[in-house]
Image 1 (cartoon, rainbow, N blue to C red):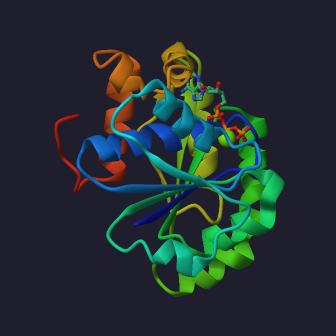
Image 2: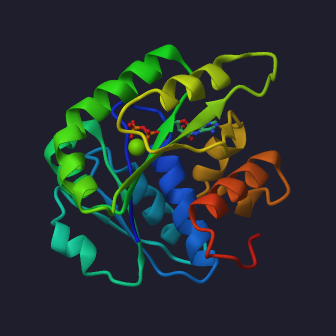
Length: 220
Ligand SMILES: Nc1ncnc2c1ncn2[C@@H]1O[C@H](COP(=O)(O)OP(=O)(O)OP(=O)(O)O)[C@@H](O)[C@H]1O
Ligand SMILES: [Mg+2]
């Protein structure tokens, strides 16, 4: 399956989610091919850091300026994860037009809802083609949700996302704001490798399992 992780706004957690998903899938016995279409190269840098440190399993992540649809589809049974950035819109659109689904992390704020709306508007002609093929899904979820339950922004953001044309599903599996995501990345590790019993790890596993329900293995 080809999953593109996308959103216009920087810092929404695309690379963090792509990297953690890649490690989770590999550790659960799936072969992953990652493509990093963002000139910032965070996703591929994380793969390289992981290799340099010697963390296993190794994750194959290619840093490329563009990727053709046929190239993505050629991976057949592998799980393909594509991290994209707003700096390379042409490559983003090409990847999205080939994807089976687009996963959109959204921080909980009105500004992020607007940015997501704009993003969906910009890519909608490309998405419509794919939607007609009946293959495509867009799934949004809140990343960096507040840990304080009395703060209403997360619910409000989910509610606003549900109203946006172009989103097929607002996933209820949120990731909260946890410093362990940042700290594990700097060690080339997924959060559930560094702190397997942390809340961040639990939340991430719930999200990953919802995205890949057929993958059930030692990390669950
Ligand atoms: N749930 C979270 N809790 C805490 N920190 C997070 C969370 N998700 C992401 N981060 C941190 O926020 C920063 C931005 O995340 P990331 O680089 O994944 O975003 P991005 O969408 O890929 O950004 P860009 O558009 O610049 O590529 C990173 O330092 C990352 O570790
Ligand atoms: Mg990134």
